[in-house]
Length: 101
Image 1 (cartoon, rainbow, N blue to C red):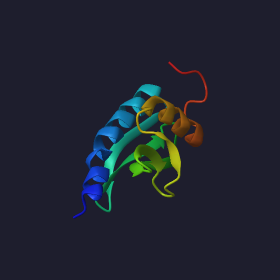
Image 2 (spheres, rainbow, N blue to C red):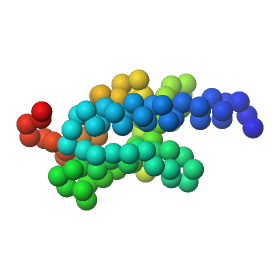
Image 3 (cartoon, rainbow, N blue to C red):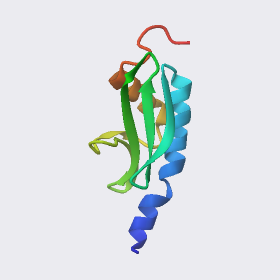
Image 4 (cartoon, rainbow, N blue to C red):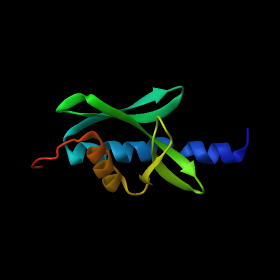
């Protein structure tokens, strides 16, 4: 096994855990880490409209950890900025667009 694969896999869960916390603090959404094909992703739903959901990945891209939309691999934001990423997810899901606590 190549070492670059080990490097890319080693940090995924801690970043997703930090995003899980940021999403919960943001409100309007519920989430949890699940495994898809052996890879952890953060499953996020809009609590007011559960049919609106997504899965978020954490990927090592071009030398940096990034949060990505798991279905497409498109980048959302830097993995060291979970609060900003939680805001982007909320906008995409239309979560809590009214008054927030």
